[in-house]
Image (cartoon, rainbow, N blue to C red; front, side, top):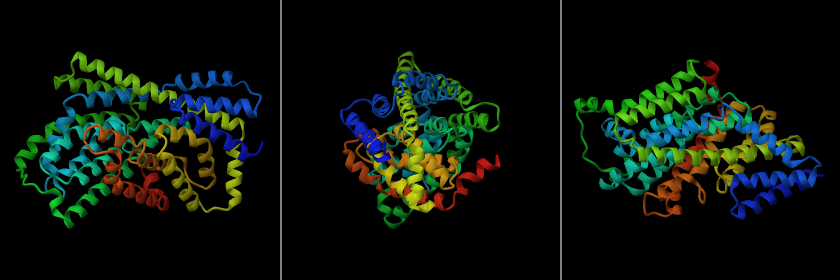
Length: 430
């Protein structure tokens, strides 16, 4: 059977099932069953049983619900509120003033949550009312929050990096290290845009907040819990003391201790934390298992080899391949979540990337950037939905506010493509 016929059939089945509002994970299983049934004599259910067991019976996968649990604890405790109070006096002197809290708070919270939506919700819950009360520009405030929230996937530890590492068989520890420099670059780029906009038009962020150095140092203890958690989680991984899974356990224990000291973790709140963790974890695992099953089916159909051969015959340069993949991922990001984007495309994209001479570690960070784009792209951008749940603006309006972040991310993608050492230098040194 030709590659075109098989590809069109699988894509048609996927569109049919997703368009029928069937869960993404279930849709992926159904497409895989259809592919094996139509084009092979292999038993689809036997293969499915093996995939389900292999993907859920993994110590690496255990890190996922643990990082989700840590993020939920921080989200529902006073730690996030104290983070805003502690950061405010240290960045109020910049053009744009308190809007930069969106960037700084998202960067710090991203380093302990691993989730873009959790980062956006936690930071937005605090900054949106404060910035509105001070009459800061609405578009700049919400747009910067949408863009900064995506740092939850780029700055380690990251749930998306864990999923990519599992699917692509890349070291999760090295992925975490590789995300540090790009994360700092993106945070700097987002803050730089705010500074430029506010230098051109200071009325976007007027304010009379003035803080003494004494007051600044008095607020430092409010930031310490998050700093300590970052040191515990990332330090234990990079020192070789703990695996990512064990580090996630350390992070959960630390967040529980700080939440108890803040006296905001009641029995009812803890029940909400556990329920939200179970819901999110099962949703993600279903998608990962379904996509892994589809990946195996694609391998049975010999599609990666055929596609790699086809693209190689086109004679595309490595940069043109990245341009084509970027366009593809931007389109996919309007329809799918990040987990689905990773596990659905890896069987096809990874062979092409390695054949073109790119490092799979580099491609993992590239994928995270493309998922960040998806987070702020309608109609299914999760960060847009999170912000929409906190303000009156509709999804398309918030997406318009986030357009500068969209282009900043794509600009950084171009830079890391031309200079891949930005990503590879640090993990190769450690």
